Amino acid sequence: MRENEIEPVIATGRSFYEVQHLLTFLEVENYILSNGCYVKFKGKLIQNATMSIVEIQHILAIANEYNIGTGFFNQNGFALTMDNPIVQQHMRSMGSMDIEFNEKFFVEQPVNFMNLYLNAKTERVIREKIIAVSDIECYAPLAIDILPKGVSKGQAINLLLEKVSDSRVTTYAFGNQNNDISMFKTVNYGMSMKESTAELKKLSSYVAKTDNGVLEGLKHFKLI
Image 1 (cartoon, rainbow, N blue to C red):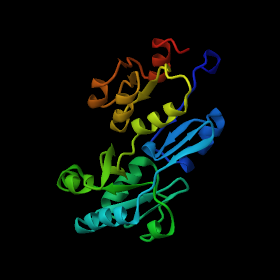
Image 2 (image 1 turned 180 degrees about the horizontal axis):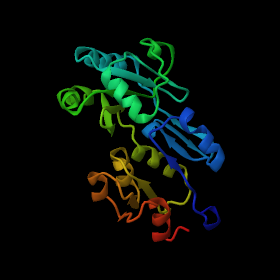
Image 3 (image 1 turned 120 degrees about the horizontal axis):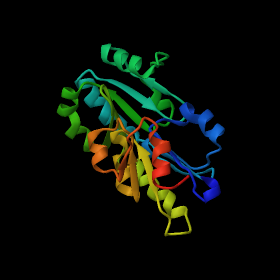
């Protein structure tokens, strides 16, 4: 791709501590992490969005009212406020059971985003209360991301484009989940994987027909 003057950008909901080895292996200097909270362009930090103490306390008050487990995340690690069956079920589904519990994490360290561990019914009940101060990204059946207001993959892409001297640059995105929706609304062409959500497929320029969706998409758009 680089031989064709195409610059790859990694865009993910994961944090730096989770993808550091992959970024090093791929020699990627441009990346959007934590659904837009943490952004680097040519190795230089251009966004490190964090939640304020007031915002966090607002979310925690809602979580405590409904007995919802909460997670705090930054680029170095994470901690949860409590353990309960929904937290356990979610963590098992993610393949991660090495959990730190620390209710004061947000006082001791910056927080890029939060997780709330809950079912769909509870999410519907509290959604309006949450979006009054923060944005929501749904990424798993039993968890939602709580982001600083206005932060998203799409917003981060616009930040990167401001750093590119050629305003005629064409942008492509590859994704499979609803946290990719803002990204697909921002780029010129969106390519969704075969198993993508119905919502994302509706926004796609192309939907993969095989399980090798990224490779298929790169060939379809003649990027390789």
